[in-house]
Amino acid sequence: MSLLIDLHIHSTHSDGTQSIREIVDLSRKQHLKAIAITDHDTVSGLPEVFRYIQETGSELAVVSGIELSTQFEKLDCHILGYLFDYENLEFLRIIDFYKQKREQRAEKTVVQLHELGFPVSMDLIREMAQSGSIGRPHIARALVESGLMPNVNYAFDYYLGYHKPAYVHKEKLSPEQGIAYIHQAGGVAVLAHPGSYFNESIVDRFAGFGLDGLEVYHPNHSKEMVMRLLKTAKSRNMLITGGSDNHGSVKSDTYIGAVRVPYLFYEKLLAYHQNLNLTA
Ligand code: AMP
Ligand code: FE
Ligand code: FE
Ligand code: ZN
Image 1 (cartoon, protein in one colour):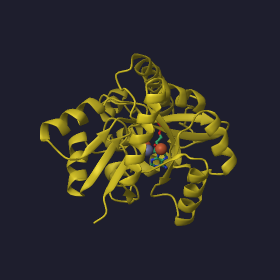
Image 2: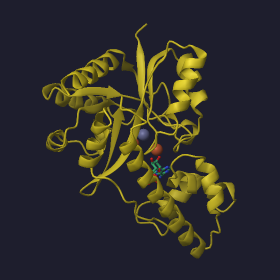
Image 3: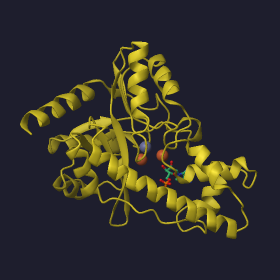
């Protein structure tokens, strides 16, 4: 039996539907050897995952993770951070700043929804997001929960999606800033699911910003895309990572077990990180 890992998992601390405990239990059931919780723009789930692993004495390895939303020209680029110090004050300050921005954006969205005739409550949206970072999925769920819209897809397709009447722009980091913040907290930066906009020159530009690796294995990457990304990462000596992008029951294609990522890439990630810190 091959040893497998999953380095891209969302929990209820962002827009996933599963708690940290559920995720750890599920990962064990699937005999995964290493995981990373990579919630959108927040580290609020990390203390609990490390505590739970310690309490339950599992052989499952966990590394700190995050998925930062960045914007590069017209592209939304997600950057994964791994093995950083999630108590680093400068890092916490930056993510808190963007958390406030998300909160303000949600408030603006609510005003627009009210004007469109959907009196959804900001408190319910906050409740949906618990203590984590608020995103459009929480707004969509609150609309459904309030009986104002039939389902989450409808909410995105007609109101919350890009260019739709209740869409509000989100202020984002640049990839250069995102990578630099991850590095200053001692971590490594990996480009998440680049398949939708991949070309070699974009990878080279990001490499110029200090990008350390590419997320090669992802449920939305075709076999051909995986081969192209592997080739690109290898020729540039970049890290290779992968994960399911699990969000729980809200998405049908991204769930724990949806991709097979060899354990070898976890070992390479650790070795690379250790080397960085030795030479820093
Ligand atoms: P936000 O970060 O608030 O802009 O929300 C982005 C998140 O919304 C993404 O991570 C997706 O999980 C989710 N999302 C985007 N489009 C859709 C859609 N059409 N249906 C369901 N979820 C979506
Ligand atoms: Fe998401
Ligand atoms: Fe993403
Ligand atoms: Zn993700």
